[in-house]
Image (cartoon, rainbow over all chains, first blue to last red; front, side, top):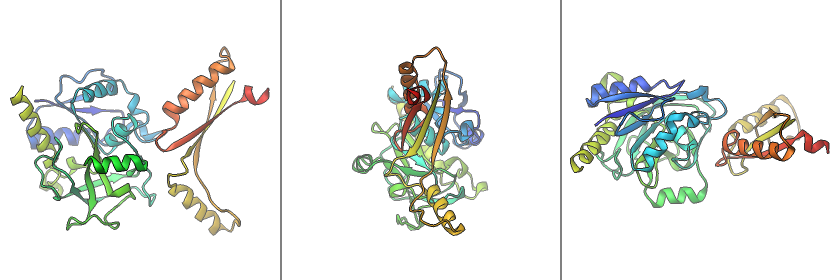
Length: 235
Length: 85
């Protein structure tokens, strides 16, 4: 199995993500420069956090036209596993691989703090090692994380169990107070219809070692690695 | 030929920046301001070889695909050659 971490101009969590995959999860990983039009035969692709293209125009609006995004779309279209973290989530929404958009935080502040996110379903390649209702302490660091979509899309996300993470309190209650950015329905992460593309605003790669005060986030990468191992066994 | 593109948040989308500006102007003392919505404005200069129709088609496409995110925003295109005629 091999992971790929896409590097856009302005990505700044690419090395953190690379470090976690190689050193914590212990799996092979490649950087993929955004000018590339192929994914180096990777089995899972991660769009990392950062400020691609300086967030000019809108977050993710310019990155989604990078040559690599053609390959990412094609890869996702044939079932490839794609994880977008923070700016990666914003890019996936702009690219139309996930529905909705990330608006400016309701309080207009850039928020950099640990939050609790509740695992809403284990039925994804990214959460299959989790328990439903499990609370993960993972940091956020964004100015535009306020998830928005129209009412019909929200109803579809709820009905199809596609809201994967919600902001919650430490006791696993989804409350208004636990919502840091005004996100619709406390949404912290969603997946696509086929469940192979996930985007989330919190940074699991920044909470994968106790040195950084929480290792709750590593379960996302371990889930992904488990999924890839299963797929490799099956083929 | 020049095009002006106005990008605004859809009415259904909350605009916290507009709200903050509204609050600020009220605090400063401006009276009678019922609401403020913030948007984006672009000026695009087009190749003179394009006809008005071609220019409008190109700018409309660019506004839809790049300048605005149709999930959250509306846009309006004005061409100076159209307003002159």
